[in-house]
Image (cartoon, rainbow, N blue to C red):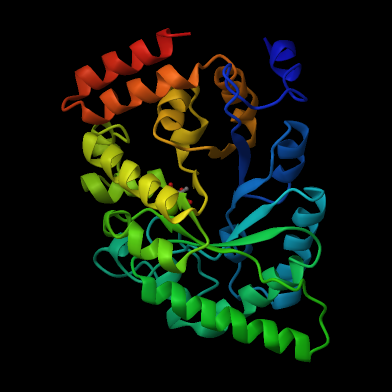
Length: 327
Ligand code: PEP
Ligand code: MG
């Protein structure tokens, strides 16, 4: 089985009827870039930077962040690297940023991710400078977590423009065009306002882990309600569909980088919904590619619509089995 998967490394990621899909890697630690390359990743669709702030009691300097990001950008050898600004708070805690994070009654709804970055602009400025410097070494995209309003994106873009000027004044050579600035769509309100967010964003990344948590009001790390956590709930699927359609209309790229992107049983569904970019754990890449190469896109698209219109979980599961049985 492993040999069969490894034989796919150099093969194109496309359906039987020739629809190409980008298969990218999610990284939680820089060392995983090597696994991503070994498994033929088309790039890094999500580089989580929380590790930089974990297990320490001071925030990392610009140089320290730059070294780590630069190593990953170089390791990816010209393939795009999507770097997400810090996403602490909620279930992701960091003591390096002080002990006022995660202490509110509802940390998942509190000061986290982009909200924290905008409240502490120095933190964001340092991180943006490190990312911008790394963008001189290869294609880089900047991704913002937990965005809910266009205003947040505009604020970050202003700060980014300011940091580019600051770095140039310091004599740092940067590419002529700034890195694309994209947003995670992982809050239901953001999904429903996707058309407005598309006006200020260069790309979308659908964070279905949090989108499921917030849409269904199910804490993603609470075992007692884990059986109710369902990314295929019609409410979640409709928000995904709305987001994808808004991105297609605005002609900006949209990827899925939640856990479901790495599940081969859902590849046909995601393709059918219009997604052409999936980002997943590096270890899932080949299995998804194997599945992708069996799919007949034209029939997947029609069946995906039926899944979307299904009102109950049992029928959804049946339709999915049907969709996967088509090959
Ligand atoms: C998500 O929410 O789906 C996501 C990809 O981000 P994270 O799992 O890091 O919250
Ligand atoms: Mg998330």
